[in-house]
Length: 131
Image 1 (tube, rainbow, N blue to C red):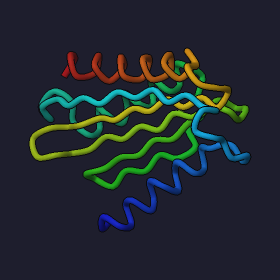
Image 2 (cartoon, helix red, strand yellow):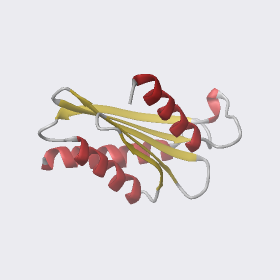
Image 3 (cartoon, rainbow, N blue to C red):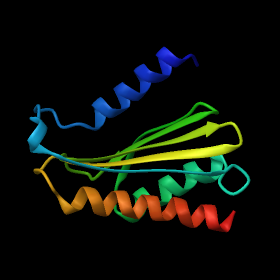
């Protein structure tokens, strides 16, 4: 898939995770983590599986799970609206990069966004140590 189509898919995935009412910049919390590991320790398959395990462990339901070989996108959230997890696994040469974003629309500085992001990032790092 080409880059414009990949970007459009990512924007669509994020839009499906957002609540239907618009939020002002100070109405939500965003917590994110970015890291990379040699593909020999964390390949795309292991990265994707770790994101799914981490999301399920915090009780999130998968809404989008796309694998495009060099980019995997995972969007999930609780059954009710108001929060979302958006995670990417990216193959970059001999590295696998992950980006994990926890969003909470209940207000700024929400510990929930941080908790979810931490749980999924910890699962990814655990998978990299096992690899």
